[in-house]
Amino acid sequence: MFRVTIRGKFKGLDDAGRAAVLAASGAAYTEAGTFTHDAGVTAFTFRCQVPAGPDDGEDEAALGAMAALEEHGHPYEILQLAVTDMRDIKVRRRR
Image (cartoon, rainbow, N blue to C red; front, side, top):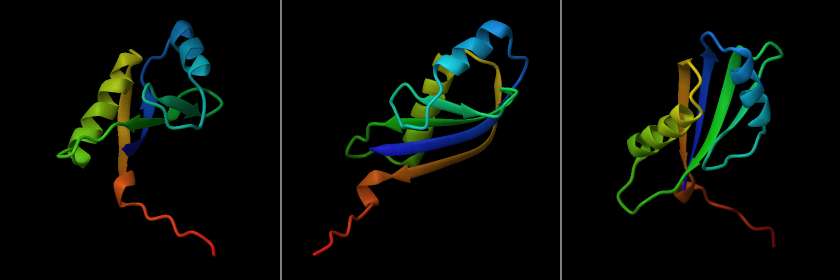
């Protein structure tokens, strides 16, 4: 499983697009992706969870997240993209 965070800004978002972004708001990582945004809904952070195949790497995860962002259909510009491979995360249990 990968978690991808895309930071960007909307380009020419209309009222219907603004309402759709507000409806998809949230801080959770989901396969469809969620948005957090500034008050004017101009800058955003898109969080997406991408399933990982045995041979998948960060490039495939980034492409999957960008495809999920495209599915929302809003005009945007990507400013920063970060990928975390959850298979590499080690959880230390308290004893």
